Image (tube, rainbow, N blue to C red; front, side, top):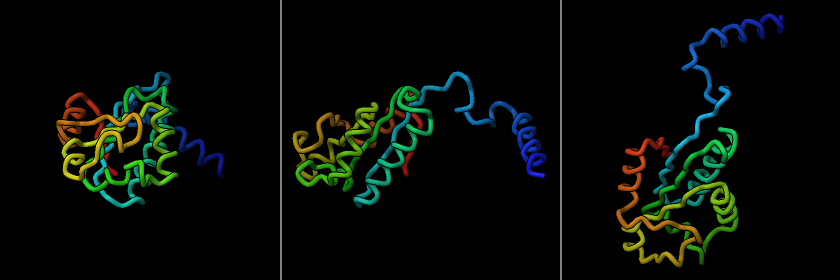
Length: 149
């Protein structure tokens, strides 16, 4: 009976139009361009978002299948990335993601409002003088998929 159910499921998947089948099943995986948007203050939220990004990279088959991935942080969330009080698990996750190509962008307006300097943020942080929301808009105009977990 199980074999019959498995066979029926395989036939149904085979009959789906190509647009419905998962992209990771194709021979030539697409190179993804993604922007993650984070503005919530809680440390749990920040860890959740970084976990989502790790799962995302793993889910598409690894960093070689990602053309570009950027985390844009503004508002209260940016305070969680000040290195003087940076949670060690958060730092390790951010380092791992940056080594896989994650661009970490910090809103210039938030930096100014909260008196946070670039030197106080993790190495590799990209300042966004035009602002975080403007950067998100620019990336979407360039074809990036927008994700706000």
